[in-house]
Image (spheres, one colour):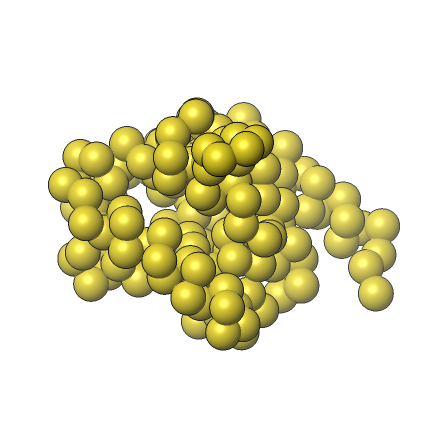
Length: 160
């Protein structure tokens, strides 16, 4: 059962997240998934979600590294592009799982990694620390809420 304090923790974290730049959001998601990705996995996928997230992941994986980064930025910013619209049509849990798959791809070298010399801004490290101190359910709620509004709206009719 969520308490007012735990809801406030998530709300504060989301407010901080929303104040980050696009690249800072991407870095934060990578750090969070790297640190707690294994525990996110059981909370997110089902068989269908795995196939859907995997299909979208594979579309991103086939792109050049520069294009991979651009697609991630487009999704975070809600820009109107094919992959961003496809992402926008996913369920909340499938969106969570898609970011987990991207983090796995970064670690495996199939998705453009965070540069080795990248130094996160103080706001990123502060939010990461805040997230690490949350209870597991709060972490999942924060992550889900952070990625749920990303992506573009699917188009009506024959368009995606």
